[in-house]
Image (cartoon, rainbow, N blue to C red; front, side, top):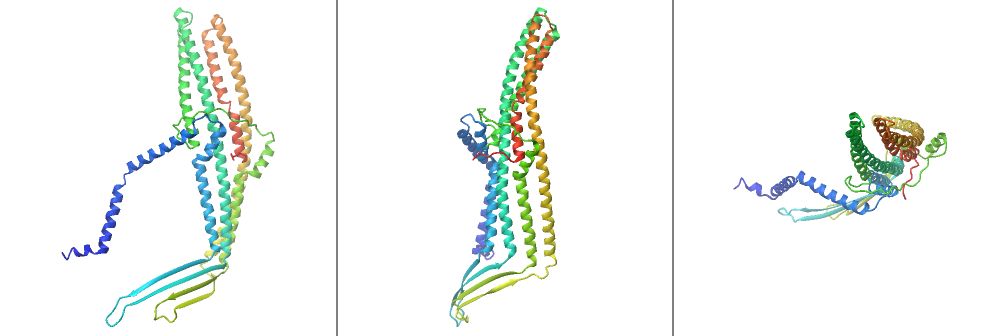
Length: 453
């Protein structure tokens, strides 16, 4: 019984209970159940969100607005900006006084020949910096950081607009491609059936019948591939808008009007250098580094602060029940192993790094604008050429098929002409929206991408 008595002491009992609770908590966690619970809750939330937003066919503007609200990159950028705002407010607290209060109570056990003694105490300390220049530059740097977070959030949203626009037009291209291939597959099956009938009558050769069948099978395979590609592009558009890639979506096809800038490429480059968000971020980074240099230089300066401290006690043995002291304190670091010198030199190197990064961003913006402007012109020319090639192939195929029916041309030449026409049709469909996508890329390269209000 004496051996078990220590285990029954209150501190030991509390420790045993705490250990049992912790062990029970660890044993109660089921990773599989937690994953299933989260999966069910998240998929249900996605389904509810999609049911409310995807009930009607969506235009490009509607998709962009949904992406601005639901896209996870945009929401993360907003949270980063909020953290920067909180950091700025924390840096400002250095200019405010600090107040600390404490209180205590003491009870001394009774001893033989003495009475029990009880006493209480309290203290109040106030401290206010009056000369601490490093705090000024730290706060100035955090203010610039908060402004940079706002610019970065807007730039992230510009990228989301481009991503949504590209996915929207990719879905339209996929839908048109599937429609074209469905028509081609139907025509190829009809042609194969007609050639097969001619082959049974001995009017065409066996290899020509095989060629017609192979053409129909090829169009069927391309149709299946196009359908799978459309499913993938729809999923990418849905994910960009913050919805489940498995949700159903319909597009109205409304995309507004967009025209390529008429200015020469030199004017576009100069315009981009004036307003591009990356350069604005680089400018503020240089300013932040300059504040850090000034902050490091403050390591050579003294700091001054005023303080006031008061204490109260009810102890009869104290000489005074209340004490109050105020004064001025200063600290000047005379030697810290040359660490302040090293920090100052490091801050100067960091400033030079930010200046070089800004120059690199300057050149990068110029190159991207030039490249994007060239892609816009290439896309416009390519679309015109593809359209013209398709129109010529349609006329040629009709002529060849008519002559083949009259026996003036081999059936194989008519089949080859239809294959060329089918490829030209698909290429024309795929380049129909390339100019719009290229214009969107040029707008982002220039920093001109418009955000919805």
